[in-house]
Image 1 (cartoon, rainbow, N blue to C red):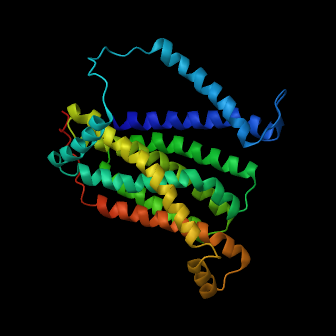
Image 2 (image 1 turned 90 degrees about the horizontal axis):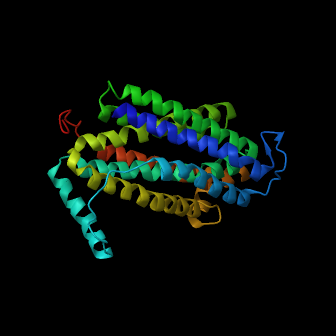
Image 3 (image 1 turned 60 degrees about the vertical axis):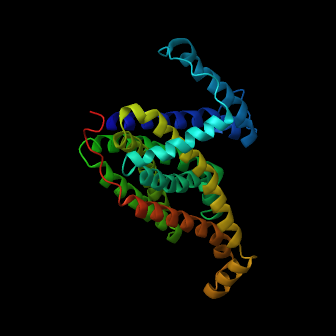
Length: 305
């Protein structure tokens, strides 16, 4: 199951790269300098229509060739029942030691990771002064690294303790984000981007099977529902945290002005300060998650056996 998790995550990132390459000509009018006949660049807004078409095309095999096992219909759930099920799911975590702590720690990890994914292009543009072509290349290389990381860490997870492996991956995230803040060397930036890609694939590869090993197989649906709910919440709270920190550290704000005066920053450093502070806030979130995670016990190998 651990290696299959890595394979699944890897194929997901392969799809991300393929989708980006297929849509890129509609945005820029070319593909890394190669002119594409009959296609003219329409900017970022032009990506939506071809993306929708790709969604449709790749959904057709699922519609026509994938058949589910018949299930007993439980009726149409209401909003009140949905919230009650979530509450009951949280209560049920008490039966399985470490599950609630794991979910809270994973929320912190996902909060930071989702925020990086959403804002990395903006950071590269404003702080690192990369143009759109360089940013696209950076994202593709990082995503390809995530493919490799998913496969490799999936293999490693077959022989390593999952708990220890997750701790090492999160520690790698913390070090990489700190390196992003302190370096302006572009060669180092590209290396860090590849490392972050590997760590990104590795985190998704290891957290899912660990949850699966923490709870009985019969309860997987309920707890993976909580797991997904936590991830969706992180996708909201993380960017909100980032935006708040960037706002507060803007050189025109009181907090930002105080930092600028204390450190005697140049104009470029003043421009970069809010976004580097945003990255540091994600480091804090990762560190908090790692602190919470430290008491999660390695799952018993026979929990689903």
